[in-house]
Structure formats: C-alpha cells, structure tokens
Length: 327
Image (cartoon, rainbow, N blue to C red; front, side):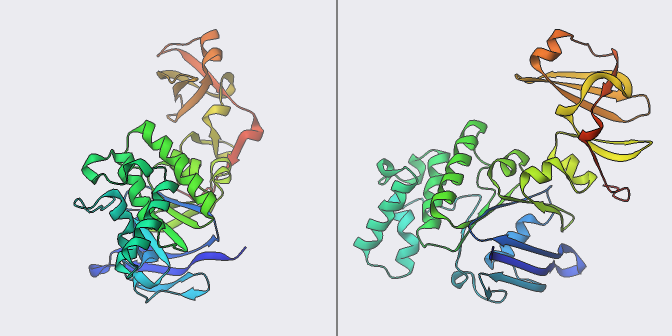
C-alpha cells in the first residue's frame, strides 16, 4: 500500500547540539490511523510538528503522498492540525469557528457557512452552531476544533494529544468518535498521545518512541504481543520483564497465575480492579512481577499481602527480548 506520509532519516537538532529526533524513518500507509506514543521528551510531538511544517527539519525528508514537502510552508502541505488547546476563537460562534479556514481561503460567506454546517452535522453538533466556545463543554469544543480541521479536506489530519484535557468517560466517547470519522472520511490520521490505552484502541499502526528514536512501529496487537524491547514491554504495560537462567523475556501479566514453579516470592500489594485483581510479587531474587487474575479466580483462593506465593505461566507465552537492551 502506498504511504501517505513517509519520513526518511529525519533528524531534529536544536542549538547547543540537543537532538530531539534522531534519524528516524517511517512509512504511514494511506488511510490509516497512526499513533505516536512514548514518554515525555521522546520526540513524538516534535515529529508531528515537522510533518506539519511548524518545526524545521535539520536532516532528512518528509514526503506527503509522492511530494517532498520538507521545505514547504504548512498551508501548502495538504495537512491540517488539531492542537491540544483546540485554539478556538472566543468571539466566534461554533459555526463561524468551523468556517474560519474557508474564510481565509476567500470562500463566500453563504457557501462557507453552508459547508461549516455540514461539518458540524458530521461531528454531531448541529444544535450548537450558534454557541460561543465558552458556552460549550470540553468535548463539544473538541468537536468544533475537529470540524474546523476537517473542513479544508486535508490529505492528512495531525492531532496533538487531543484527548488529554477530557475526563476518562469523555475520552472514551471521543476515541470512538475519532475512529468513526477517520473510517468514514478515509483519510490518514496521525495522533500524538502519551496514553497506551488510547493508542491501542485507535491505531492501525502504533509507533513507540524513546530518546528521539523509534523503538517499535507495528500494528498495536503486534506491539502488545511481541514487544521489540524491554522498554516497549514496560511502556505499553501489562507485561512482566524478567530475567531467568534461560534469558530475558516479557510475559503478559494476564497470562501469569499463582502457583507453579517459575518464580517464588511474597505478595507486596493487591489491587481490586473490577473484572480483575492485580497481585504484585517481590521475588526472592529481587525482581518484581505481577499477575492480573480474573476476579472470580482470585476470590476462589484469595491471598493477602505478605503471603508466600509462586508464580507460573506457560512457556509458549514468554516472549524473548534482546539481551543487549538495557532499557
């Protein structure tokens, strides 16, 4: 499949020699939902801004479609960006905010307002067209910002942590909305997030970054099932990273069970999480491990902090990790 966005050995250096993004290459297929994720300072937002043209590329090339846009202004790249702050004009109605990009392009008022209404319909905000941003909830403001970004029919939509300001319930709703819109419109979305759950739920390709480099880029299921390194396994979560005589490996916490002969230690913490119970184990060799047990299974034979236990798993569920990866 042809890539909509391709980064070819892209580097971003700042004054004083600081490297924010270090020689990364990435091909994002047309019509896919890509999430860039990683800890603070990993280079994900800088990468997004270089694609948008808001950050200058020090070395390498940025291609959108078949066109090299490395040195082009943001307005002519075929991208639209939705910022974390939404950046709505407080004195304009929701309808006028959505229409603003068309206004800047010289589209006649009646036509731009008609098209803006169509995009408010698309994000299910028709009834809020006349309201000012201050009269809208956070989720409604986000939908207005999304409609404003989409009305210019970009080839690629860039989203900078768009859900971070929302409460958990609303975040889940907006995740569904973003995925629906991306699927219906068929355009490429590139979404920066620090939320592993968000990336797993949304992406067709999850790009995990660390220290300005790409640690792994793959379908989210592959990233979760087969993390490329100890860093990826730990960052994505839901894994134990352990070293035993047979080497170092990752094992999903939901594939671990109490009992067996793999690891011995004592319970240090228990957390009830509704459908599951998290049991934390301090092993005799100093390592820490967890088991995520179904609620009914745990309560059929509960343990308490301080209890001596062993941890087991099936050998087929252990995923080998590179021995040189110290992260």
